[in-house]
Image (tube, rainbow, N blue to C red; front, side, top):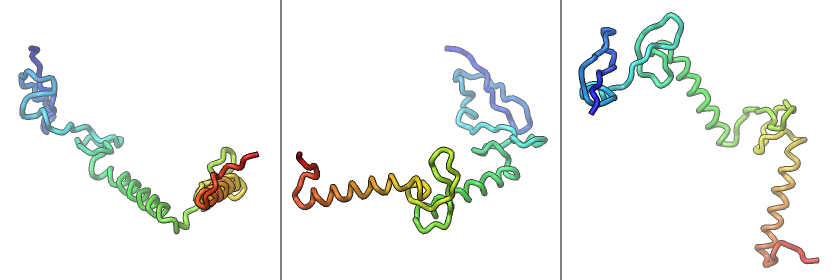
Amino acid sequence: MAFYRCPYILRTGKVCNRGCYHPDGCYVHRDSPIHIPCKEYCCSELNRSKYGYCDLHARKHCKKKQYHQKKLEKMAQGDSPILIPCKKYGCSELNRSKYGYCDLHARKHRKKKQYHQKKLEKMAQGGTGMEEN
């Protein structure tokens, strides 16, 4: 069994350095969350935030995440007035298509959907959906 030193940094800024047999630290600090300094320039406050910023600086990242969640919820409802750019490479036209393509590029997807609907209707009527020559 190896002997380790606890690497946990106390609030005072000193390292715990208590002797232990577990590589994660002593029994007191083993399950403690890791405190890291804030990522913001000139701020050295220790934090446990998932963003890596202290409470003061993490606010803008939380707000950004909330905004994107609301935007995704609106898009999922389908009655969204949000315009998104066409998925086709090189096309920057904005659209509201459920396929994600502008009118010019969505034609292929609409035709494909119509083809499959007709095929399902034929199968429901008793045909196989495949014509024999």
